[in-house]
Every structure is written in structure tokens, then in C-alpha cells.
Image (cartoon, rainbow, N blue to C red; front, side, top):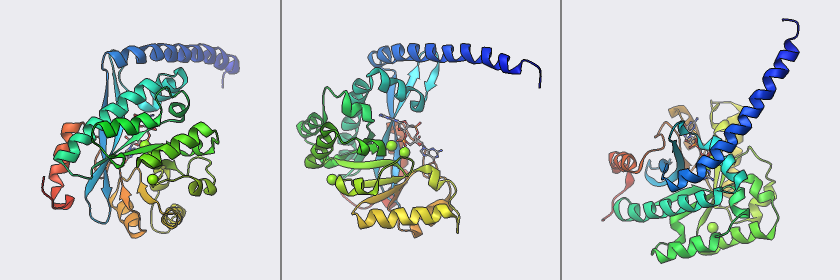
Length: 287
Ligand code: C2E
Ligand code: MG
Ligand code: MG
Ligand code: MG
């Protein structure tokens, strides 16, 4: 190791940090214009009912086509949108798009079709619009609350502010369902699961990744499924990529699964094609 490596490392570190801060500031600025210039779109990932293979649910995931940077991952820009407060406007846009889509798919795909949208804690706080309006806007569109699921993360449940609690209660009152995303990665105390009306629990993909017979992660998944069912929740496994993972989860009693094994997140038209191709398992009904 060369002499002075520490100093080199240090001098390398500072400009890199500065550049990262500049990139964030630029992206925060670009997010605002991106919303006006329609650079965002939603993609939809099928959520498969394991017992039947049918698909009546999808998770909406945002995509940002930046004019010069190309496709920017939500994992990268959502935190920037959160800290800049723009997440509220982005969240409203996501809601509007998802509501229109579920309205269409309830008519063309399945009468009980349900779309999940992700809602970050910052959206509960900076909220200018609130959750009650979501419910009434669905109502104005002739849609029941049950057409939508709001995905929250465990951290939100640790927030005991009345604002968060009231929002979650309002969701339940409107029939909008609640899903606890990335379960197992946060700090949620089990008592919170009972305190709030949570409909779905999503096992984080980090537990699904190493599922093999006898693995401790399989024991964990089984325990989560038993507990969730005892509390009246349905379970969705995230990040299912192999038939082995699917089969182990099915045998463990998991209700739903989502992952590249079934499909990547798809543009609406591609989702419709995927849905039609899996139609034999999607059930029998009249449109
Ligand atoms: P999430 O809600 O936990 O979404 C699941 C992520 O896993 C998605 O990444 C999805 O594309 C990815 N995924 C799905 N199946 C597989 C699989 O089999 N293997 C692997 N390795 N990954 C899989 P994506 O779309 O990049 O989104 C990342 C995160 O960004 C989301 O995690 C969510 O927290 C956030 N996000 C996405 N869209 C929105 C949005 O509209 N609003 C908010 N507030 N957050 C969003
Ligand atoms: Mg999610
Ligand atoms: Mg409920
Ligand atoms: Mg997740």
C-alpha cells in the first residue's frame, strides 16, 4: 500500500461527497420539472394468488425517464423527493394514475381488480391533501375503497403522532386496504400489528432470496405466515425468482407472491397481454 494512501483517500472522498450533494440538488430540481413534463410513468407488477395462479392484483411502481440520465431508479430518487417535499405531488400523481388504471382494469380484466401503491412516511407528514380525499376521489370515480391498497413500511407504525394514526384509521374506514411492505427489515414491534388494521404483510425479498429446504429463512417465513394468519392478515412474498421459492412458500401457506419468476413490472399494455396469457387461471366471469 502506497505511502500517503490515507491522504489520497481523504482528498478523493471530499470532492466525491460534494459531487453527490450537487447531483442530489440537481435531481431535486429536475424532479419538479419532470412532473410537469410528464417524465414519470407507472409500471405494474402482477401479484399472483399462489393457490390458484390467478392475478387480480398488481403493485404500481414509478419510473422516471430523465431527459439526459435515462431511467433513474426510484430507490435513488424517492429519497430525494421525500426530503424535498416533492413526494406529496409525486404521490398525488401516482394515486391519480393508479386510480384511473384500476377503474379500467375492473372493467376489462376483473371486477375485483386491486392496485397497490407505495406511500412513504413523508407523504403522511407533508400531506396537504390527506387520505380522506383519496377515499372521496375514489368514490367520485364510482370506485370502492377496496380497489386500492396502500403499502406502508414498518417505520410508519413506530410514529405515534395522531396524524399518522388518524390517516391509517381513515384508510380503514374508507375500505382502502393497508399492506406492510418490506416486513422483517424494520423495527416494528409485534404489538403494532395488532394495534392497526393491516390487511397484508409483505415478506421482504431478503428473506425469500435464500429459501431452500431446511434454511433458517424458511423457518422465518413459516413463522411470519402463521403469525400473520393468526392476526387476520394475508401474506405476500416479495422477490420470488425461482420455482423452488414459489413451491416452498406455497407449501408454507403463503397467500400471494410477486417477483421476476412471474413477471417483471410491466407497462399497462404489457400487463394486459400478460394477464390474457394467464387467463385460464384467472377464473371464469362475464365482462
Ligand atoms: P418496494 O415497494 O418494496 O417494491 C419492490 C421492488 O422490488 C421494486 O423495485 C420491484 O421492481 C423489485 N422487484 C420485484 N420483483 C423482484 C424480484 O424478483 N427480484 C428482485 N431483485 N427485485 C424485484 P423498484 O420498482 O425499483 O422500486 C424500489 C422501491 O422504490 C420500492 O420498493 C418502493 O419502496 C419505492 N417506490 C417505487 N414506486 C414508488 C411510488 O410510486 N411511491 C413511493 N413512495 N415509493 C415508490
Ligand atoms: Mg411496495
Ligand atoms: Mg382494513
Ligand atoms: Mg418491498
